[in-house]
Length: 512
Ligand code: F6P
Image (cartoon, rainbow, N blue to C red; front, side, top):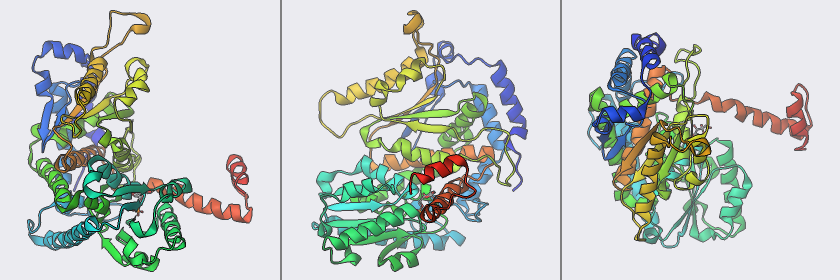
């Protein structure tokens, strides 16, 4: 497939010109166009997005869509959905979407992998139902890190109803022993099930935590490792060597940060049950279908991925804030950080050539309304403009009167304040306004809606990565620190500081 690098595509120069001569006054654009909110809002699979409070016009979007065409985003998407090896540096297809594809719905080369997906899914869900019914198991401890932690932790946090399962879920990721120790305190081995989640089954943090958990289990008189330890991995021999026989596998075409749909999602399946997990997959599949079939003007992930490119490369925003207005989504910012920054935090193109333009912004965030009483001061009056993303859920599952209306009013008010500002106060009470934000609505936080929301973000990240011409599916940037940590551990043990820079040597001496 031949590609035009985005900065050499004709639309790139047109966008630069459009930005230079354009009118960035978003407030004024609302005044001119009473239809603006509708014009720049779109829904797909129950995810409704109002992106009208961004510095865009119809022409901006036309040029962005031309850029997508010139950079071959649609053929690249089709290559992903055809199972071609678009993870070029690792020579792998990228098929997390296949994990939510309905059974028997594909013919040809992908029919067999799909059948394997459903065999594993059915086995995993049957096991999850068994664990749900097992009253002896009161605590599920999930051990994994990165993509083997953030997705499951976030979804369980969003959707688990402890009163239905009678189980507590704990997530341990950090090699910092304080985390595991705090979880183990108060647990009883015969009431605990450990899920060891690692695609490679070699990740240092996970292995250390898994070994410590097993030692604790035995020390506390735990009898049956085979019953109390389960692995989710694509390296089943390593899991067997660890002593785990109950193992759910997946494939090298599932990237870590895209793996919650696979066996890595076992804690989700235990928390939601067979039906809930299938609804999560169905929501994501509905978004997949939307992304694959909708033309550019009605394609939500495409338009939002292009908006991200506009904000990064033409508006110069190096960061984006995420403010979920639902406490169940408190881990969503961390999940999105990995999704976007590990995928698109690259500075070379697919051929390894250095890029002259910016790629992934810094993502960060906290749930509202807490953030309002912390960093929102800077968002409203600071010298750096930060595009914000509000994610709100219309209905609540609690019955405390007044809370939901107050919560949602706050979300809408923050977006309004960023846009409208306050110009008549002057001095310390002046708000410049014209600060961009996007508002994402879900009608309810259900498995189906959350599945659609997460697939929306996956595809949106795909789109900006495709425009930038990078490989969004490798993560070599995490390797150097890992190997240096191994090297430093050895050096510390042998007191060998030779060849280290002065600062590193000084820090290391303090560890000995
Ligand atoms: O350190 C990066 C990374 O490889 C992530 O991409 C991945 O999600 C995480 O580590 C965990 O990897 P594994 O599932 O192999 O333990």
